[in-house]
Image (cartoon, rainbow, N blue to C red; front, side, top):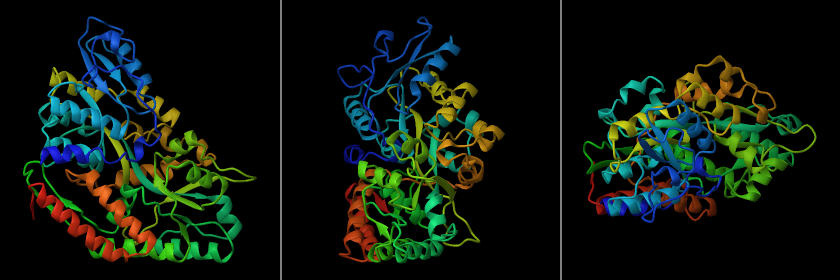
Length: 452
């Protein structure tokens, strides 16, 4: 079971590591980070202090590590970028199989934690003071890194979802900001009838996005607890999820949304030039689009952001797309010291401020989320809109969390196939999810799980 899960982890690179940067650190021959100070990608300020090796990729990690090392005489971080997402996971999986070569602390997306937990590759931080920092995060953020009574990582950043929209296009065509998905469909039809652009996009390469939208309508895909690691519940074809799948297939059939793969040059260019009126995405999107050239172009063109449309406006549901964490590996030389770094590396006021100022990620620490300055700061990408306080902070605080499966990336691979059939119309959205349910149930059984 562990072997297959390790392979499945290599399937896909997820959203919050989509900028494609490559390794800048030095790695040892077996793929792990060498903790000797001469082989770190950063300066070791206090060479006599014990060192904790860290693999991490988010954009301002080098700045954060430098800040940390200057402030801590008791421990120094030896940072390496072992690649992003799938690239890093491949090296970590190799280290797990070899029994050596892993860092002490590793950045992992929340969705892959259970797969590595299943391989006994991660330390249960509930035994190393995780509760000391639990109050720094929302209940949803903490659930994402927990399984039963165990805690396998410390949250770093997240992706509460919202609807980014072109206010100039909305104004030109008289589109009201949709508060429900029915409103969204009606606006899409109005745009098409007037010869306007696509309302949005349904790309087959964003299964995590589609999962979040089905979760918004009540899907509880997995019933899994690491305390009972050989049992799992699978429920991917509930009526709410089928409604979401059929809804988007209907928009596609009517030509109201595009089916372009996201995170491509063409797609980002389309966002910039007004080919799409909305971008249903996460709080990290402004930072990503700024770096990828997705700023709105043209006379009077500008992006704004509004809450995610709802299925029931009287009962709003907040969902999340993406997010990374710091986990401690079972190869850590000193698990207590490594846990201390995981808990404190991205927690100082100075480090959090740098993340906010550079708009590189959406931090989950409540020091930021409860800060008036963060809430009221005009966001340049949104032409001065106070997007954090108006949209993203409320969305994050309302997010209830998610239970991931031990084979998330394999599921994403199969869901991508289902999304392609929804796009090409070879089957209905409902039937695509029925097939996905059967596929994932059979897969779980084949890996030795008892399906509840």
